[in-house]
Image 1: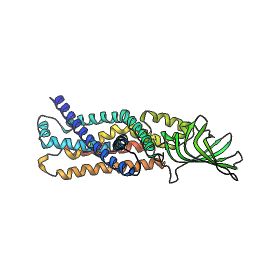
Image 2: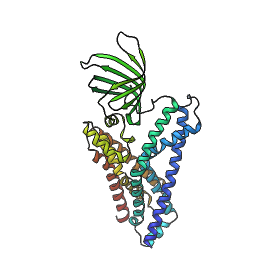
Image 3: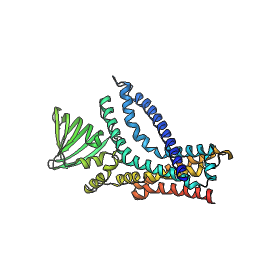
Image 4: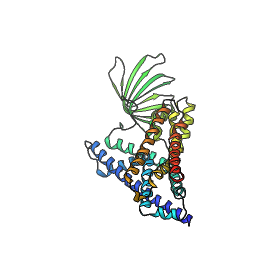
Amino acid sequence: MITTLQRYFGMRFLVTLLAVLFGVFALIILLDYVEQMRRMADVPNVSALTVANISLFRVPQIAERILPFCVLIGAMSCFLGLSRRLELVVSRAAGMSAWQFTAPAIVVALGIGIIATTVYNPIAAVLQEKAKRMEAEVSGNNTEGLQATVNGFWVSQRSDNGQSIINAAGSREQGVVLSKVSAFVFDQSNHFIERVESNSAVLQSGQWRLEDARVYAPGSPPVERPFYLLATNLTPEQVRETFSTPETVPFWQLPYYIEMAERAGLGAAAYRLQYQKLLSRPFMLAAMVLLAAAFSLRFFRMGGVQKMVLGGVASGFALYIMSKLTDDLSKAALLTPMIAAWMPAVVGAMTGFVALLYQEDG
């Protein structure tokens, strides 16, 4: 009987969670679609279907960030629904404890977290990159990529021909394709030679290919060229480390990025933090279930439902603030990436566990 009840509770939580995810996903699509329509209002010959496709590809990564809150809301809705229909009362009368009908939800949350890390995250990263590419094609420029500073990206590189400094307004494909490029070329003695302006640049083997280039040399009129080859010693891995953000790298590629960044002598702390956060995601979702159970297992007819819901939402928000704080401390080298990623999950789980233990067992 207990096994049947636990399977029933697990299915109820799964159905409720999927309903919450579907509703949040639809809401995000609607809001993002309206925002994209506003941004592309001045772009000619853009169909509503194209804008909808861009929004559809952008939304998975946005929804991934609020997945813990969806689990929290889904768990609270499930437990409150079971309490309202007196199913939890009947289960307690049948000999089940709160831990027994909370365990199925925790198992489901762990499974959802594993799927979100190993399957959903790589798909969301690929779709996000595709959305950027479609948006660049529609708008006629590539400035919708990652913005490193107000003036775009700055990269200093050296080759056998000398040194050069590249400025780009945007990037796609994690930095391999740049847009609105300005290159300042120097010789081996660091004397300025020329400046090259281009609409786009593509990293090839040992060189940047600048398309539709205009070359400005001191004392000479500008020269138009169909392309300009700028020598570089940068590899695609080094460029991706410079231009890409950890959120745009799929889960299965993060170890490779970390290894290549360390070989190149570049900082890999941000990638380590993202990797550890993805590893801790299943346990973070389980912690959200424990927090929801601590605020939702009270007998429904005793009242105070609004306070319980508000307390659960507040605890989830406090956990989110803690997560952002630990991320900032990790980026400032004040916490190791592992501690920064796992601390919110551990603190949330312990808080929910202690609160539930106090309620059930005194």
